[in-house]
Image 1 (cartoon, rainbow, N blue to C red):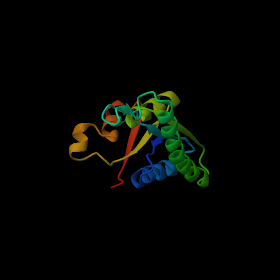
Image 2 (image 1 turned 45 degrees about the vertical axis):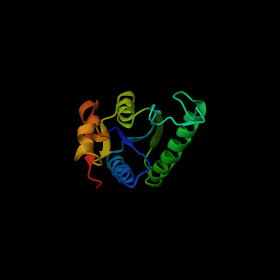
Image 3 (image 1 turned 90 degrees about the horizontal axis):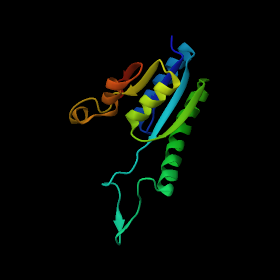
Length: 149
């Protein structure tokens, strides 16, 4: 059925539900699971200043290291859930936006399916371009949107 499934996590309860669903799909199909966590790059609005000096800047090695450490922590939790279910999983900490990270890993790994939660699919978030909405328009493979809310 499936050979490679991609799912994202941001550590939230709804992401945990999507990860659990992806794990179950992998168990029944024998697919390899690719768990993705995106490290969002700082924007000008996110960059603060104290006494006129920037606290973080795009490309800042300290910020990047801390962002990757946070992503790795979320990925370890999801990978543990996969291991507990005896599902073969690989983790990917990607710098950038969540939707772009999911699409990129799915393309690079030749995924058959991307699993995302429905959070952000309704209301203003949908108009502004939520992760599930963007992935639905640009996925290189099938997409499963899990009802998590």
